[in-house]
Structure formats: structure tokens, C-alpha cells
View 1 (cartoon, rainbow, N blue to C red):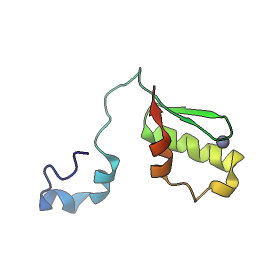
View 2: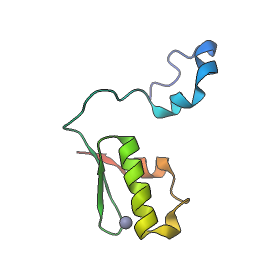
View 3: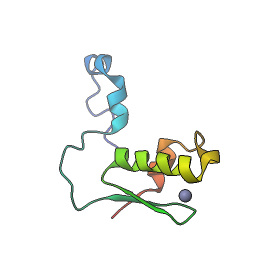
View 4: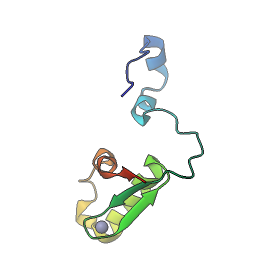
Length: 83
Ligand SMILES: [Zn+2]
């Protein structure tokens, strides 16, 4: 984690939420995708955290509605592996 390397008060004032994103992923990464193997056997893939999280949410709503709201983005992304 590179958090706090340049923590200036002024930088914090504007958009504190941006820090949670963990930096910009503007690079066009064709090769690397992130993958999650769901407990039900479905494999979810996304080109970045956001896409993977969106797919995971959609899958949870469709197949595991009881888990919606219980599984956080952090939980999902912690299970992701890069391929
Ligand atoms: Zn599933």
C-alpha cells in the first residue's frame, strides 16, 4: 500500500473518497484480468476492480440474493486473483 506517502492536508480536502480507489488504473491492460471463482462454480472476470465488482453484484443478485448486502466490495476483491 502506498497510502500516506504524500498526505497533504490540502489534497485531502477535495475528494477524500478517491483515496479508497487505490490509484488510477488508466492503463489499457488487455492481458490482465481479475477473476473470482464463486462458491457455486461460476467464474466471474473483470478487467479491473470496478468491473469485477459490478459483475459480482449482478451475480449475487441473480444467484445468491441472500448474500446481497452481506458481501462487501473488499470481500469480493480480496478473493480475486489476477490472470
Ligand atoms: Zn455464485
